[in-house]
Length: 378
Image 1 (spheres, rainbow, N blue to C red):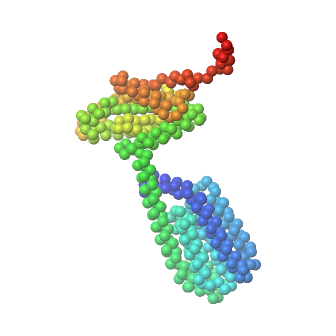
Image 2: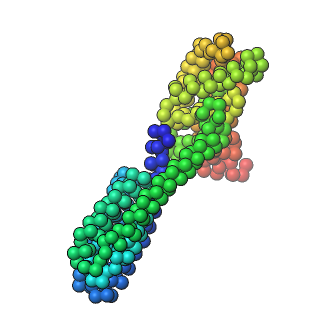
């Protein structure tokens, strides 16, 4: 993955990690609490009464961290903290159980190893969490548990547990590869569904969706909003004389120019082979008209190289601003298209600003005083 894909992948992991981490943490707390409760019934209640409460508080604190907004903390710190807390809890639980067998140790730590892999949702965090589990588990198996239980066999415990760490690490690597592959494929599908193959700008469906969204936002917040509709003059003639490849280069040059001069908040798309649509939020009609006139002049001055030949072309632009009578995005786009057709009829290489629509009689409101006067008998 490149840098942009990697950054987007991390953001995607942040979106789904809080919910899954909370569910896994609750499951882990329930599992280790059940194990502690089972050992409590074997006569270790006096030892576990205080330690179980302490570990429950610590685990609850880690669970509370999933609600914070810091994504890196959720991705990296929570798996590591969970590995440390539950590893120590497993050691203390086994140490308080006089008859703890050597096979109960790998059972708890194998479960913990696969748990932290699922909890991590990130390869680096999984490796660090597994390393934390391995360090604490090794200290417990080699030093702590043999000291409190002479029958505890460290070699037996480690022979079962260490291979499981390798399997868990391999599983973490496989899961991360599958997540990356699925994410990259998802991004590619999204790109193909929303982008034009030739230019990389928004395709017809996506730019229409953006037009609807921008229209709704402008209407809601009563902000100015304008649209520009561009068309390459005499495109079919250019294509027949210069060839398909040269026409494609002209389309790409025009798209690149428009993307460069647009603001970050603007949207630009290609709804047709030689027609483009620009959405200009927070822009009034004079600003849109000025921009359109500048674009016509700049494009006419361009010298495009295609197949060793120099090409010049012009564009026609229709501009329109949101009006209070516009009920949906199609009304604004229709007026923008009419302005574009007017510019083409004038010979092209010109920007035309659409006139504000005239309200229909059905939309007019009659004042109460006038309505009463009209209803009076003659």
